[in-house]
Figure (spheres, rainbow over the protein chains, first blue to last red):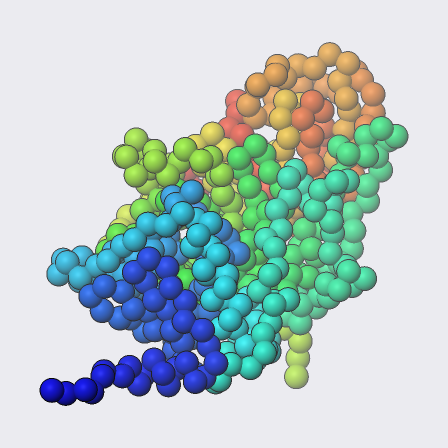
Length: 328
Length: 165
């Protein structure tokens, strides 16, 4: 009779690097010096750790965002606003046709807690997953320190308009928000505001481009102004959007400065559908049935225009609404 | 080493990107350029360049004084080119009924209490608050603004003219 026991030397070796193993449901996450390893019933999947952490950062900070957050062509999450599907291959044509996909549904708060713990544990000192690659260190190697300040930034959301009394404050050097190195030529002048007594909360203006030029994060929309559910979300984009965002509603892009190139794929299959090149002043819709990934060669200002109406995902997925915004 | 240069478009100088189709219809992206739209618009025409069900964003050529408008809900204006003033009045007798969507045009300056004014330039965003009347005054070269609002009687939809087909 053999007394030998099977030893998972790979897992032991990873554990020796100092990172914790994180699990929820049937999913198990391990990291080594260069990669995240996702184990699930039926297989495992590997993602480079830099892209995994950058994607995880957005998923956590956005509360799973609108629709689908594809970390790559295989793994991702779908937000159902209260619950979240975490999947392998669900939106990958080859996985689906060969029935290799796997999906579990979690309460949003449970998955968020696991993701937050993993992000904290796996993000080393000196690496900021929200920063452009040229502005941060690398995430590789054995566990060393942490970067809690970088991973606990809150998404900035104006209730009515940034800078109004009681609303989001403006950014400034004094508040520790310097102008980004790529926006040193963005004018910082303030508008002239002459409000008569009693109208200070209504007669209001601010320098939106200056506000955005002081953002220290990339690919992370912040709400500047609202008209009911209409949200102007400004964001600074540099290098590559780490995720491929799958829409569950129509959203619009307004390119305020510079240029972004977008790859557009079918939301369910990942088949390429279009390329969209956006230069300053261009406006384009992102249909409700696509996924998109952006490339910004220079840091640019993009206004993502969202409709925050919570009934929309169901109305689009049921076919009540067409996936494109206008007909002509 | 030179500093990075941020590129802003303007009425006089803009480049336009576009949609390259692999397997789709370019109309699905309703692709346009606000400077091109404003260059072909009359002063203060409110041309929709984005529509998300009842919400719109309008590209507006700011040139001279606009009519007076009134709004029953908040709107916001973002200047993309040029400089202009916005003057505000709290009307004694509001014309825009509660729930009225989009701005309405007034016959002239309304009677009411002056609320104040703002001077805004490229990159500045101003509130057009619910229950107010307002007028744009552009004194110099024509400018371009984007208005975040709700589809209304004054919104012009000419998608076939402005979008890539």
